[in-house]
Image (cartoon, rainbow, N blue to C red; front, side, top):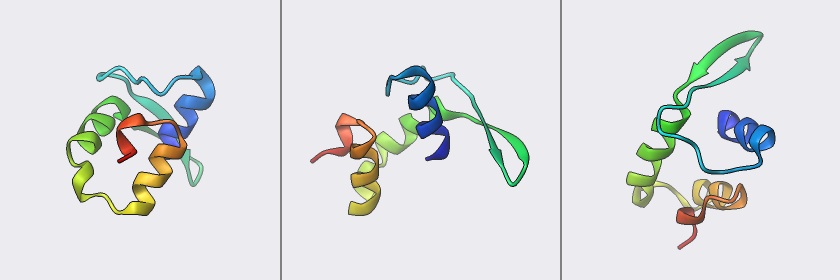
Length: 67
């Protein structure tokens, strides 16, 4: 989620190319997150997400998270 928030803050868009990797810093270490693949997988599995997860995604502007 941190990678998605960072991407939106930087680009102003929730449209993430499938092959995009976002670098995030966690506990002082940089990690590459395959954000485009994560978004795609999350969308495919959205029926398994709980309401809090869907609300968070919808709050970030992810239209498919809104039922």
